[in-house]
Figure 1 (cartoon, rainbow, N blue to C red):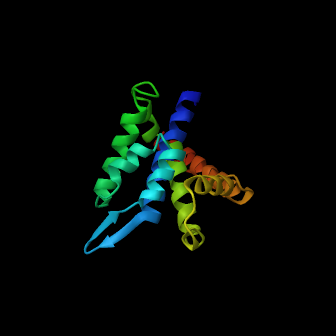
Figure 2 (spheres, rainbow, N blue to C red; figure 1 turned 180 degrees about the horizontal axis):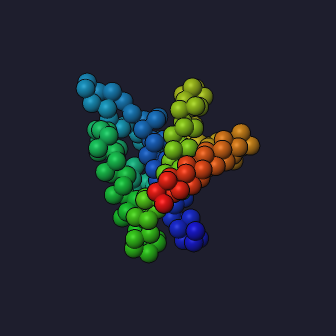
Figure 3 (cartoon, rainbow, N blue to C red; figure 1 turned 90 degrees about the horizontal axis):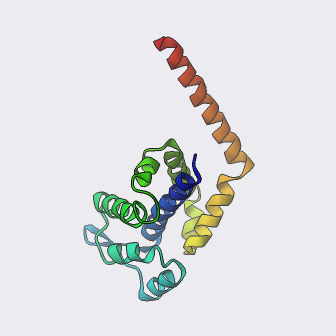
Length: 165
């Protein structure tokens, strides 16, 4: 993969992970609605530490969080902030369609599920989430499991290719 693609993949994943982090710590039930309510002190800290992600926060803060709203807002932010601005037009579309991006996001969601109890104990900075996720993802256990999955997929692909011929 070209370096440009790899960088775009990591930037898109960071945005998606940031949105998950926001929802994890700042969703509040209000009647039948789930609202994103980030306290002003946290907003200021996010603007200071994650200037490039602050516009996403501004778009989402104090808004109802439905699945559709969340997906549309995040995808639009990824495209408008990366595609044609930071990377060549079309790169982000290639990232979204790639198995590498799907794998990265699947691993992130597995990590949040497996570590949910730990993450709920006390709010963590977004950078702490990213550091813990990176350490988990690069652990021998996860790498070994990923290798087995990739080997299984490779064998299935070979099998399906042979049956088609």
